[in-house]
Length: 78
Image: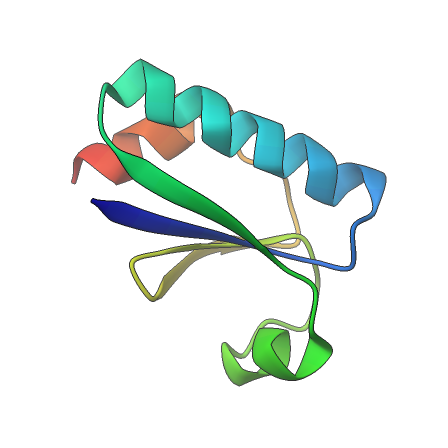
């Protein structure tokens, strides 16, 4: 099972990214846990300085933008 972390304080962009991530899980047809990370210390530990950020299985795949559900589904399939 994949672990997806959405990094951000809970702003509108963070919520859109979370929705895209959940849609991507369905599109990819995989099992995944989607977790919101709002703690700035944990966000900074990933080296992310602009939110929202997206982490898949401990690897930062995007930050400072909102990737589409299709892009996220591709990353999940890798």
